[in-house]
Length: 452
Image (cartoon, rainbow, N blue to C red):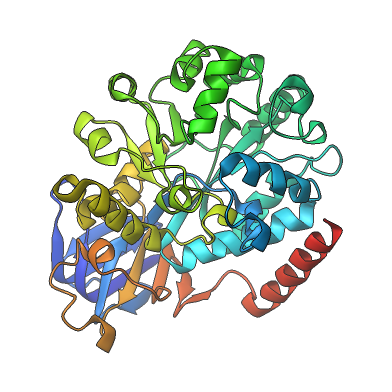
């Protein structure tokens, strides 16, 4: 039995059912599962000294596009909103190949890990006509090397420009091809058991890039296979206008008619739901992935998070694509969300602790999991340590639960643990040769942009 003892933490923010914060606490992980949280030191195969550190549950990312890591900080798209931004970038993304997918996944997930995210969900939906058959397989390879829990989605686009959609025709696929590959990936990679390291969901891209047939048949297939459903929805007013003009319905009404409501469904963004739609989401336990930084950068709007929380809509936190963020740092997303909602909602805004809870237990629930997202006996040994014993934290440590929202933390973690395994130590990724991978990824990115 492999065991890890973490000792002498200045504070352990458990995010458990009692919202406990333990001072001078200790924690034991055995065979990947937490078996003790409390005041006593426990013997173990390996000991981590957490003196001067805050410990938090591993963060859970509920929406991402890892392939976009290679199109960050492009000058020509910095002032665009979503539709023109996508149209411009499709011309570059049509050149993706397996190396791009592998190295962008290592880069994006590596950054997530360094900043405390232990579970990464990715929404990959760009499949060029040739050479894209193994894209998601390469993502699982990268995740396994890093040691991160990975929730892949088999994204898709089936409505091209010639059919009134947004993407170019050479980036769309037939419904049959999409469903066949969806089934293959679920059968090969999806593990629904507790403490799973790999899961798969089905994720047609958006109402303006897929056909009604694909949405309906994906819902049927997902429920046959016992997996979840995900897509973008209510992200922009342009999307709303598209749905009204082309489909004759508001976005959520259209998705409901396609069978896309329920506790096995979550939407990315959800900015422009009206009051009745929020109540419907709450009643059906349909989830939302909140992407505050991306929403601000693309001028899409502000998600109604306080209203969602009051109604009981399941909400998780997400970084969204690296090209609309332009990073993969869920730790920073907590502070951005805190400030955005304070500005917008004042006293009705969620606290820093409520946003930490959204990024851990809330996100876990959106992904359909109750084995991650908190530090309690019987839960997964996923956590991160922040060294707060430094001059820049003097006077900032009175409330460890709210700390990440109200103060924020701008350095990589002292350590990150996934399933009892140390995967980041002193800010370094332990599963890969980081300097070599950085050079290879940089070279791959430059060649990709040269081709474009």
